[in-house]
Amino acid sequence: MELNVLGTSKVALTICRRLVEKSHTVGFVVSRFKENAQRFVKDIGSGVPITYDEIEKLSDVVFFAVPDSAIAQVYERTKDRILPGTCLIHFSGFHSSKIFANAEKLGFHRASMHPNLSFADPVVAQSNLLNCIFGVEGDAEGLRIAIELVEDISGKYVVLPEDGKAGYHLAAVVCSNFVVGLAALAERIYEKSGVEESRELMGNLIDSVAQNIKIKGVAGSLTGPVARGDWEVVKKERELFKSIFPQFASFYDQMVELLRSLKEGRL
Image (spheres, rainbow, N blue to C red):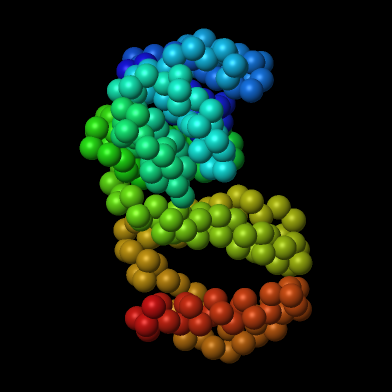
C-alpha cells in the first residue's frame, strides 16, 4: 500500500519504518514545517516531504499522525484534497474513527489503529514493536485495511467496538501511565532509604510483575504484605509513606483497600 502521513509523530515514524521494511511505500509526508517532514523522510528512507499548503491529492491510505486534539481540525483542512476510496487512519487510543465526520458520504473508508506501546524512547519502541498489540476499529473496509497493516507490523490486535474506545484507552492509561506515577513515588522512597539509583531495580521488579500477569492473571499476581495479611507491616509502612508524602496520605489507604478487595475477590 502507499501510505501518506499527515504529521511527523514518533508513533508514525516507528510504524512507517516497519511498514517500509515490509514493502509498503510512503507517498507524501506532510508537516507544517517542511524540515520536520524532510527529517521524517530521511529517517525512513521513503516519501516526499511537503507542507499542508503543497498538498494536491492524497489517495490509498492517509495516516493522521497528529495530537488527538488536532485530528478533526487536520481532517477538515485536508478532506477536499483526499480522493474518494481513500482509507483514513489515526493512531489515537481515545477517539474512534467516527471523528472523520461524514467519511462515508465523502466516499472515504475510516479506521483507527492504536499501538499499546510506550513511545517515550523511539529506539526502545522500535525494538518492542514486534510484540505490540494494537486496538483496531473502523468501518468494514477500513477495519480490513487496518488489520492488514497490523499483520505486517506485529500481527497482534484486538478489534474494538466504536463506542468502546474511551474505556479501552482509560484501561491503557491506568496500566501504563499510572505505573509511571507509582514508580515516581517508589523512586523517592528508595532515595530516602539510601538507594540512590533505582531505575534498574524498579524496571526489573515491574517486568517480573508484568510476566506474572501474563501467566497467572491479575489476581494471581498479587504478592506482598496485603496478600499475606501482614497488617502490622501495612500499618508501619503507612506511617512511613505519610511522613514522605503527607499530601498523598489517603492514597496509601485507598491502594491498600484496592489490594484487599482484589485479594478477597470483591473488586
